[in-house]
Length: 88
Image 1 (tube, helix red, strand yellow):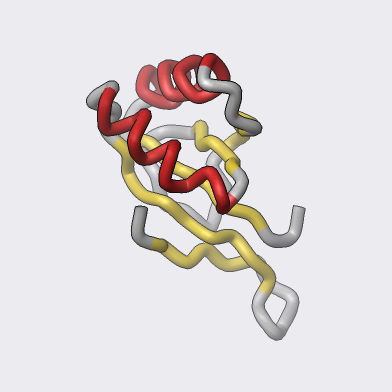
Image 2 (cartoon, one colour):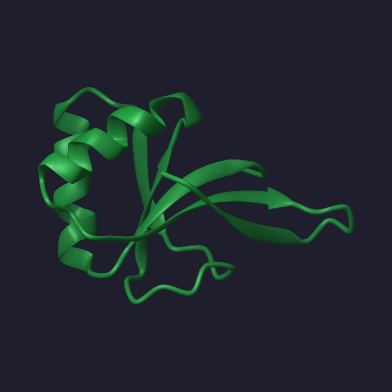
């Protein structure tokens, strides 16, 4: 789990609701604790496959889900994990 993508949320309610919506659509996701590299008001994030980003955005917008941000979590040259905010 060295290189992955997550959506973080402003509330646990939105994280749990998003998980249900995305799983019901058949997307391959995983709910996990928000990585410490991402400052978030909610302790849960959803890990997703990059190729599903557009579909996830559509589903969350259709459902009026409020997100904090979308991040690429990776290891930098020194081996430390970092979070890069990306466009949704």
